[in-house]
Length: 299
Ligand SMILES: NC(=O)c1ccc[n+]([C@@H]2O[C@H](COP(=O)([O-])OP(=O)(O)OC[C@H]3O[C@@H](n4cnc5c(N)ncnc54)[C@H](O)[C@@H]3O)[C@@H](O)[C@H]2O)c1
Image 1 (cartoon, rainbow, N blue to C red):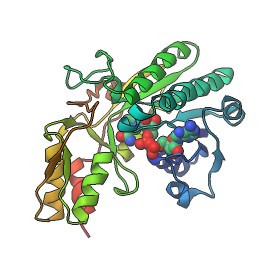
Image 2: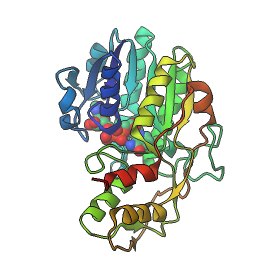
Image 3: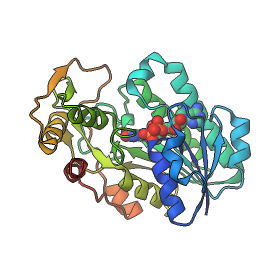
Image 4: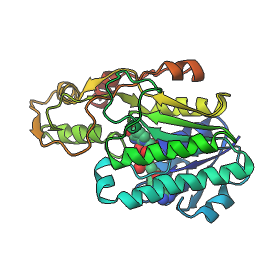
C-alpha cells in the first residue's frame, strides 16, 4: 500500500515509517522539521519520499496527499508546558492543520488514522479510563486534541477516521526521542545525577512502548473498524516515583530522587482501559516497562 505519514520525522512517525517499509509498503513523509529531525529517518532516507511541508498549508498538503492508500496523521505540537505560552500556534497546527488533513482526505475518501491523546480526558475519576469517559482536557495541548476529535467525528461520518488516544509513549532511543519524563530520568541517571520529580511523584502514568504503539496504529489502518476513537496504552499504571526508582535500581547508581514544583496542567492519574483496542484491533502490548529500563543498562 502507498501510505503517507504526517509528522514522520518525529518520534512515533519515524518508527511507524520503518515498520511500514519493512512490511513492503511505500512511505511518503510530510514534516516541517519544527520538532522532528531527519536524523530520525537516516537509515531509511533512501527508501522514503520526504516532503518538507507545513500542515498549516492546506494547498501544498492536498497535492501530496492525493491518491494515497491511507494517511497516518501524526504531525502536531506536543508540549503541555509550551501549549500555555503558544496557545494560538498550538491551535493553528493541531486543529487547523488537522482540518487540512481531513479536508484533503475527504476529497479522495482516503482513510485517516490520527494521533489523538489521553490528554483529552484530563483529570478523570474513572480509572482505568474507557473511551466513553467524560472528555475534559486539563491543558491547552489536550484541548487541541479534543478539538481535532470533534472535527474527526464530523468528517468521520463521510469516510473512515480513527483517532488513537495514545498514552505515554516511550523507547527506543531514550535520549533522542521518548516520553519526556523517561528521557529526563535516563539522562540524569547516566550522568550520575538524581532524577528530578515534578510534585510528589504519586502521579500515575500509563507508559506504552513505541513498538507496540506502531503495531496498534497499523492495525487501526488495516482493520475495518469504521470511524472510532481507541485508547492505546499499556493498561497498567506506574507512579512517577516508582519510575524514578526503576532507573536508580537498574542503573545501579547510589542516587535519591529530588522533588521540584509541579507544572500547571499536570494530570494526576492516567491509565487506559484497553479492552476496545483488544476487541477492535486484536492488539495487545507486549513490552514491559521494567524489562525495557533494565535493558538500557545491560551491556
Ligand atoms: N509521544 C507521546 O507520548 C504521545 C502521547 C500522546 C499523543 N501523542 C501524539 O502523537 C503524535 C506524534 O508524537 P511524537 O511524540 O512523535 O511527537 P514529535 O514531536 O516527535 O513528532 C511530531 C512531528 O510533527 C512535526 N510537525 C510539527 N508541526 C508541524 C507542522 N506544522 N507541519 C508539519 N509537521 C509538523 C514535527 O516536526 C515532528 O516531526 C503527535 O500528534 C502527538 O500529539 C504522542
